[in-house]
Image (cartoon, rainbow, N blue to C red; front, side, top):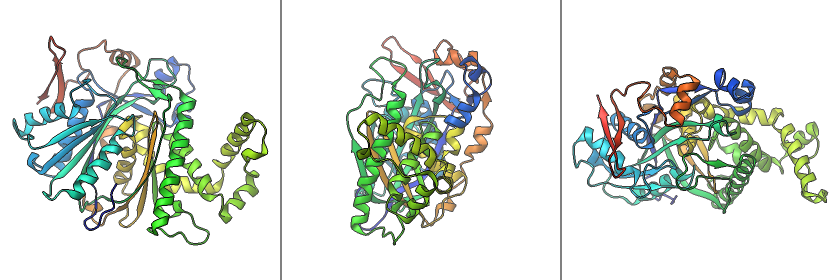
Length: 450
């Protein structure tokens, strides 16, 4: 993101849409998969998976979150210059999902109302919406028409039935309003990135479910985020934008650190990796090693596997130390609140963390927030922003209230929806956008149901 010479640019407001259906990870689901429920609610951290109904897809969910964002802010179509959508759940191999979303919104605002607005679909696994946000921030900084941009993250995380990834599924959409002089979050322009070619997670053309190599994907996530954070750290410290005092590190200057959340426990693993890297040269590290022993070093082992085993054992001990638990509790844990009730929504998961903090009223003007975004395949970006003075003026999102009002479905209905063997909706659409069908050319159509 570019450095802003005058007017700051960032997120002015956000809106979250989640389907009305959910499946608990405990009860019938855990029993049918022969999984200890505690592994799911505590070991993974997901209590409920958000399930899209038969009339929902990434396009309808994106339209719903954007419509709510527009209504919350009294936005009209001619005040919006660009709509960028980050998704890995696209509904067409050529046509941008944003055009479908515009078509749905014009059923509310009138035909042609979004003609002077451009849209593009960005795909880079779970980091796609972050690249969309970066691009729109750059555009907003240079835009002299005073128009807003909207980033939509909309996805359905779907894995094969009975697969290891099944219990991390979720669905939902987050829309971000991007403009100059934002009320919520202004970005400082510093980013750190990391990219390399990996096969940790992918979905072949024509496949409905993703292929994920679980342990490798976790390792790629941790490596990429740590390397991107290191790049970010070098840049921001070099400029003097943040000046840690003796005994301090960069993470001490962040009130909250947000991570991409494929499942809540992953945010804990990622923060542990960051804190280990940050604390090694500080006095507090001596206290850590006094309690759990010295950290193993690669040069002390002739066999790589032996080092990795020792390092993993040290990491487990570190994650139980008072120092880490205090840092995790104060800077990370609350950002996983919504994800525990929704599951993974791919491109929107990082921004559910920001939504969690707004919902819990944990954002204090002037505090700095760090964002750690990751997309399999793989790529990571770390950036930061400052909470703005008008953050408390934003209208309430009532997200947790809406989550509590969802309808629980049984295992049979879940599996029928998952396998697309059910065409009628469990809850008939009301006051929402809905998939209306496909024609003889397999072109998709949508409507708004009153």
